[in-house]
Image 1 (spheres, helix red, strand yellow):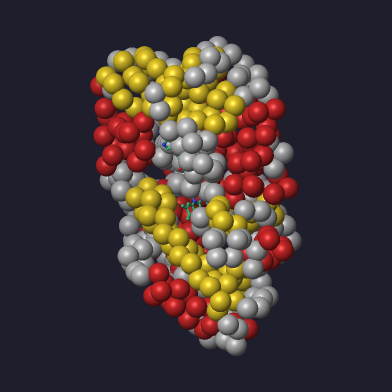
Image 2 (image 1 turned 30 degrees about the horizontal axis):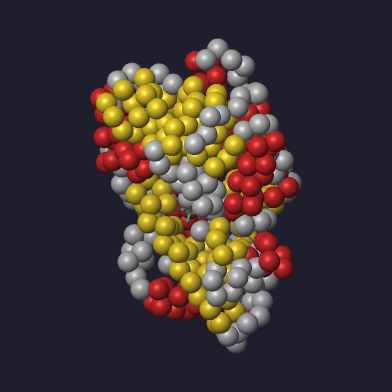
Length: 451
Ligand SMILES: Cc1cc2nc3c(=O)[nH]c(=O)nc-3n(C[C@H](O)[C@H](O)[C@H](O)COP(=O)(O)OP(=O)(O)OC[C@H]3O[C@@H](n4cnc5c(N)ncnc54)[C@H](O)[C@@H]3O)c2cc1C
C-alpha cells in the first residue's frame, strides 16, 4: 500500500502515456505511470527471442522526419540519438526480377526535392513520373489547412484515381506508402489521414520526408529513457500495474492497481481503444458514447516474420519489395549492430496473412527473400519466428466510429493514445501528439504551467 500523493496518474506505458508523463514531469508535476505489463512500450516494444537470446522488436517501426511531436518527446528524454534520420529520403526497391532501383531526393528545397526524386526514379515510365505533378496542388492545399485534406467518405484509392495516379507510380509508391502509414488497404482506408501524412512529408524541412529508423530495440529507444527522465524528476513508473479508474458521474471516484488505491488529483487514460472499456468502471454514463465508439472500432493486423540466416545476406539496411506479401525487409544487424543477426519482414494491412500457420509464413517470407536477394539463395535459414499483432492499429475506413478528443465530461479524467482524434493514422506520431495534448489540456484545466 502506497501513501504517496501524485499530481497525475497516467495509465499506460506506451508512447502516449510516456510522452504525457514526461511533458508533465518537465513542468514540475509529480506523476505516476501505471503499466499493466512487465515491460514498457505497449505496441512499440521488444522482447527476447528464446532460441537466439536476441532482442526482437514486436514489429519493425519506421518513423518520418515530420514526426515533430515524437522528436520533441525523444529530445526531452534525451533519446534523440537512438534513431537514425536519413539526411534526405532514400528508399531502395527490388522488383520481381531482383532489379534494384532507388527513390532518392536530390539536393533541392522541400517540396521540390520529393518531386525531383520521383522525376528521377528510373523504375517508373516517364508518363507515371509526370503524373506525380498532379498531386502538388492538393498537397499544398492540405499543408495550408489539414482539414482540407479529402472529403470524409473518400478512400485512398478514390483519391489517387481522382488525381490521375495510376500505373507503377501508384503500385510502387503511393499504395505501399498508404499501407505502411495506415496499415489498411487503400481501397478501404479513408484518404484524409493519408493526405495529411503526405502533406506533413511535404513540409518545410527537407528531412520532413526522411525515413527514421530505430537504432536500438524499441523499448530501449524511448521507453527506458522516458522512465529515467520521469524518475529523475520525482515521478514513479510502475510495471505489472494493471489499473482501474472508478468513475462516479462527472468525477473520478478512485484509481487503483489490483485493489490498492493510487492517490492522484487527475488521471490520463493512455490505453488503446480496446482496453478503455475494461479500464473505467462505476457510473460511466457520461462516457457512454466514447466507450461505445471504442468498443466498436475494428482493429487491423500487422504480421512480422523474423529470419535468421547463417550469414549476412543484405547490402541495404532495408528494401521495399513491391508486389510481394511482405512489403519490406529490414536487416536488423545493420540497424542494431552486434546485438542482432536477423532480418525482419513486414506485412501491414495483413488481414489475408494473419490466420496462416507459422511454418507457412516463414516459408513464404524465405521465398520472397530468396527471390529478391541473390545473396540469400545459398544461405542457410537457421531460425524463423512470426509475430502476429492482431490489434496493431484501428480501422480508418470511412464511417468508422468517431475518435474522441483528450477532454472527457468527467472532471480530472483525460484520454491519450494513437486513437485520439489527432487527424493522423494510428502511429507513434499520433500517440505522441495525443500524449502532449492531454498533458497541455490537463495543465490548463488545473491552471498550472503548460508543457
Ligand atoms: C507491429 C506494429 C508495427 C507498427 N509500425 C509502426 C510504424 O512503422 N510507424 C508508426 O508510427 N507506428 C507503427 N505502429 C503503431 C504504433 O506502435 C502505435 O501507434 C503506438 O505505439 C501506440 O502507442 P499508445 O501509447 O497510443 O498505445 P500502446 O502502445 O498500446 O500503449 C498502451 C499501454 O497501456 C497499457 N494498458 C492497457 N490497459 C491498461 C490498464 N488497465 N492498466 C495499465 N496499463 C494498461 C498497455 O499494456 C500498453 O502498454 C505499429 C504497431 C505495431 C503493433
